[in-house]
Length: 163
Image 1: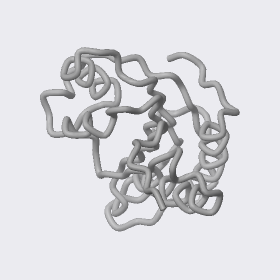
Image 2: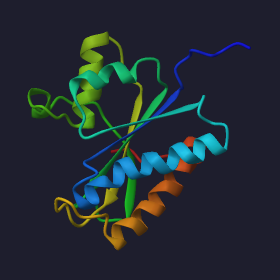
Image 3: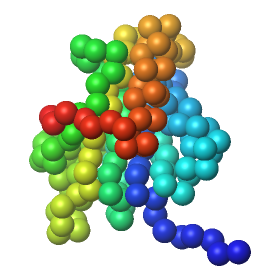
Image 4: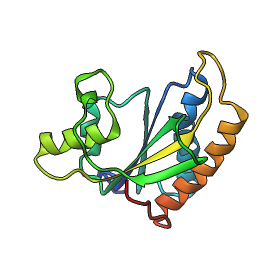
């Protein structure tokens, strides 16, 4: 039996704090997608990662990818969830302990001297971030919609609008 060591073409990266109410939607989506991918024998095509926040070290997770979907809670999102193409852009977050997805793709370009993989952001409308709270009911409903959108993205059935 040959074991493939190639990097999956698609990376799903959900981030947020599972202990702060709706901030947990990114990691919760990743957990649901990992189960979906395992059940549909898709783990070789799509890799799932989570962390509390994006950091400069995550540029190494982007190597050899065709596309990346960053998933996060967003209190300002007008829709239940929104998926959009992400431009690479330098911003002030590269000087802090946490980075924006755009700053991370910009850093990738600076480190590797080539364009970053196609990157997208899936924002999930959220409402509360209290320490120790669970995801609220409305955010759970939005999360369910976001999971379906992510499945379509992984299956190549979704074209995100440009930023």
